[in-house]
Image 1 (cartoon, rainbow, N blue to C red):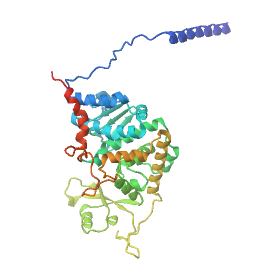
Image 2 (cartoon, rainbow, N blue to C red):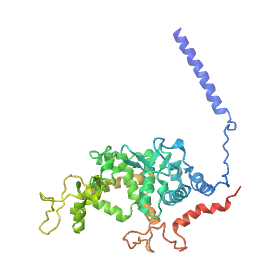
Image 3 (tube, one colour):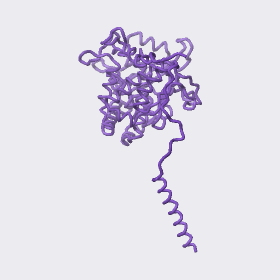
Image 4 (cartoon, rainbow, N blue to C red):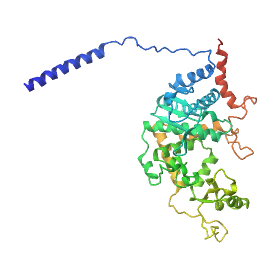
Length: 414
């Protein structure tokens, strides 16, 4: 009886499944019950120019929504946040196109962007602070589909370094996470600094000490997945001088000491060697009080010193640098960069040097030979705020904003 029952059940299941397969494959789909027309933008809105720009430059080519009218449901409800202003949302939109999407489009092609681009960029006006750890979240990538950027109301196109730190390094960082979700990163990378990752207290690591241990930033020292994308992002946005300074810093061992602020300033005033004196890192005690009461944490290179903390010089009167931790920070960073370079080339056919060069030449003024122009302060000249070669009465940033403002002529008033 049991055997017959099993056969009968199997026959019923097969019959139902067969009919399901037939009906699923033969039936035509009817009209959608959802109203999904491409609705025209409201020309009477003050935001019409930006809405049109992001539709034509992000939504239509890449299926990307640029969300600047902050959505509570898509925000961290545990943090006090405010929306981005229209003006700064506009600036970030044109800069994201110019320094991110146009760069990848040129170096990797539109198929790459259509395949791997996030589907949402959500911009928030205020910073996102984490009181428990004393850190600030610059951006987030969620599920390979969404990137959130904070602190947009403090965007300042006059400061490229600040732009990179707050926004464009963050964009490349978070985009790196999305790419890594599609192609695994080398497992050998995770072993390079496995013993020195510090997920709990990375935020209290000075840049110099992080570099000495083989990390391009303190955040890179938190865990391997952040280390990977920090190498990618930092190499792309840092100019040659800044990157080479980082590599040079990584070639030494560093330490921190606490000292009276007045004692440190007195040593600096003597004009002594800063490798011996060190550099200010943070106020370690009595912050907010008069400087004569403050204690400072100083970061300095590890050198040979006597019992009184004075440098011991060699026979030629030179400082003697010591290697104590056994870590070749410089070599580690360059080894990590090579892994990132090979991974991008192998999996995405992207030459990181082409990508970096394109970003740098869009950020900094170059001469007729393609060399970066150095200003009176010894720094490269900001291309965004420099006059255009084709129209010296206008800056590049103004020209980028014109791509949005051109749609003002299409606005209507009620």
